Structure formats: structure tokens, C-alpha cells
Length: 109
Image 1 (tube, rainbow, N blue to C red):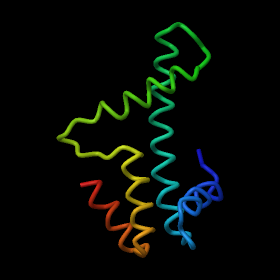
Image 2 (image 1 turned 30 degrees about the vertical axis):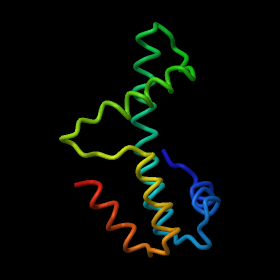
Image 3 (image 1 turned 90 degrees about the vertical axis):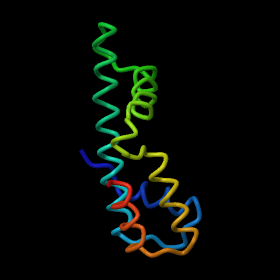
């Protein structure tokens, strides 16, 4: 699965970045793909549990809520909202791609 990079770059620019490097787009794109895949798998489980073949918006909503709340404090795994917020704050503070990537690595630990 691959999310097109142009919309990812557009999101970053729409919140205030003047310029966005390809590395920044790639890093956020990779994280978004992983998150979307995780949410999709959970949504499919909810649809199956409801004895449906069709995934509905309510399944996605449940999966997103579950993804946000299912992370134990021991994992310290950030949710997508935290990641996007940190990227946008970093960009607005004028931080470079190296600093942003370092912050991703800190969030993973």
C-alpha cells in the first residue's frame, strides 16, 4: 500500500510550512501508511464481528478510537495525532529535517 506523497506534502504546507523536503514527506508518509493499515485491519475485524462484509464508517471510527486508547503507557507509542502535531510544531519553529527525524526516533523509544 502506498499513500501518494503529493497529498502528504500538501497537508504539511497547508498548516504553514513554506518548504518541505522529500525526506520529511517520506517519513510522514511511512508512518501514515503504517497507521492506516493498523486502523483498516481493526475496522475489518469490527465489520466481521458484526457479520458484515462491508466496512462502514462506524467501523473506522471504532478502530480509530481503539487505536488511540489501546496503547498502553508501557509502550509509549504515540498516536498519529501526536506525530502530526509534532511535525507541524517543528516546521513552524523552523526546525530542519534532521531535528524532525530525531524527534520521530525519540517518540519510537
